[in-house]
Image 1: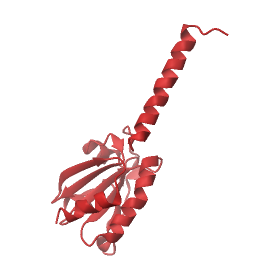
Image 2: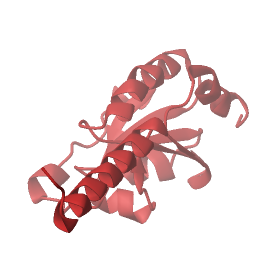
Image 3: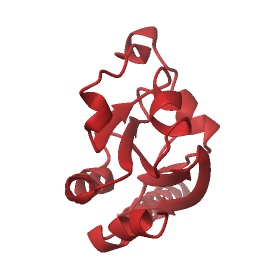
Length: 158
């Protein structure tokens, strides 16, 4: 069987596509493109007094200002998606960091449920983490990070 020009082109495009997927995965991030936010996914509950003591909370457009921009302590915002492999590997690391926190908070934002927030903060790949101090972004991290590195973010911001 001989390969004609069209077959060669298909083979080359397939190899390039596979290479891009492998490259993206090897850097610990998933590419993310903005989706259309549906009204059903935009609904969230207001923070309760019990939530105020939590060191890890979930936020969306309706409560992001409360949890992040008005916070008096450092806040690490994790932009993630349920389908993202690197995000799934990062999640237990963030859980452990949150358990150790004596001040500060980790706030998780699902980019599929809150694409407006992801666009506002120019999130182009996930996981992306933003450190906020006094309501201002002071640091941006992409990909999977170690528990020690993430915990150090909170100790250096006190």
